[in-house]
Image 1: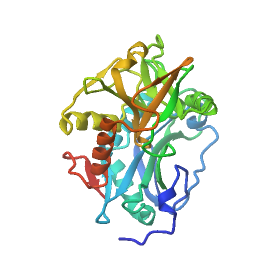
Image 2 (image 1 turned 30 degrees about the vertical axis):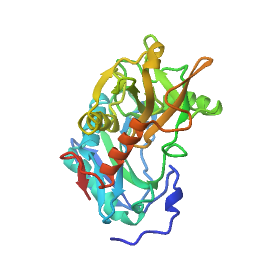
Image 3 (image 1 turned 90 degrees about the vertical axis):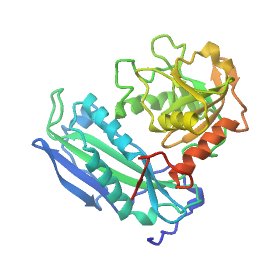
Image 4 (image 1 turned 60 degrees about the vertical axis):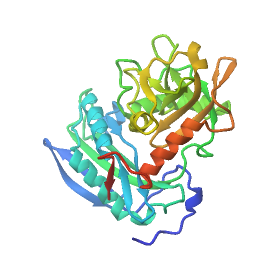
Length: 340
């Protein structure tokens, strides 16, 4: 095991940190080439690159986890590869093959192993794969060249306080249209979320909850994370919509709720006027893992789920099960863990 650098591992935030190595590959003339590690954290591209003008960019987010024995886990990286491929299809970008994607992750983690937080610190090594359209271009059409990169940084909890309930605000903006790019992890979705997120934070909320863009009667997403709820008859429910980003964390929780906790699970409509049947609620995603939702401000009414101060028992069990698998303390379903 490589000696760790001297960092305050117990108090990592969720901020960019320039590590020694990142992976970069170039796509030109129908194929990927010039792939490998580099120490250069800057990318010089032509001013006409479609990423600047037409938002031709997609990305992923996943983590590397230090286990008790010092080994390092990747959690379901094949699912991130598949989601990036779907995003690339939506934006007419070349797909990054799964084998190349996972190899890039492993190279970056191994090269920066001294920055993988120690077991028990609560920290992880966050990995950011992304692909952008580059090259001289000004017409509204796909780029002829692309750059795929993976960089990393040690991180702590996305929301301050970790597994503590926080309050969210119903957004006055739509996150994405049902036939738009909401189901893809593309940059434009996140640029559009900055203003409503900032307004929510200004009012003292962690973020906003987006409603369905057609009628604004149903819950869709929580900031940049997926929503889930636990019903009063012990069912795990999560919104179903064509504009929701398919969270790998959410689908993992759906599986664990059913197979490990014996719960009934369902992707379904979650209406604002039917929230009383939810006794717990949370946001889930790679960055946040699980962030319990204490209260949900809708207009002038604050709807409290389980508690504004305490984590619900089912949410806690799901969190412990998921993180136990990620850090190697619990047996993982087949294929979920890839060792670096």
